[in-house]
Length: 177
Image (cartoon, rainbow, N blue to C red; front, side):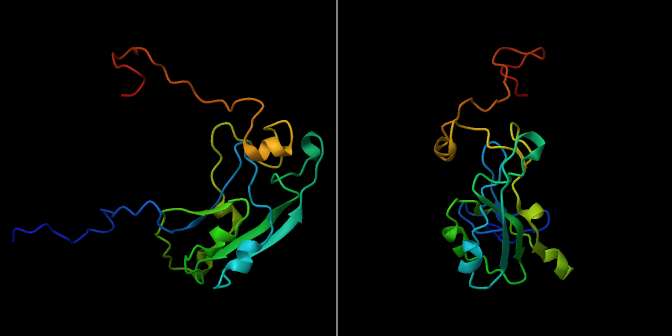
């Protein structure tokens, strides 16, 4: 009668996950928008449930529209699928990835009424493009050479939208309401 209620009203109130929770996978990008996945297939080899399928392809360097570079490496993952009917969310694929292209998010709602919808394609797994990123394929744009690109030594800073610091027209300071 005087105890805290332990029942969660799940669809309406969601319990927060731990910061290191292993949820749905995500394929990450470099700061210029190129994919980090190099199509090495090590994640597929490390998966004990055989839930990952990767098909690598060669990047093609060229000028302008002739470029077909999707990742910073020599190769990229042309086909990338994770079958969540088989995946046990163990994280061994994350540890096997040499470029840290594959990480796990806190998203845990993976249930579906259609089995085909639980096979996530590359387009479902790729991280969204952030401001300042370009949609691949394009040339590597950050850094003077490959080593600088991988270290993060950028030739030009990535543009960040300016936030006004003084008073605004509505009387609030900063630009936050």
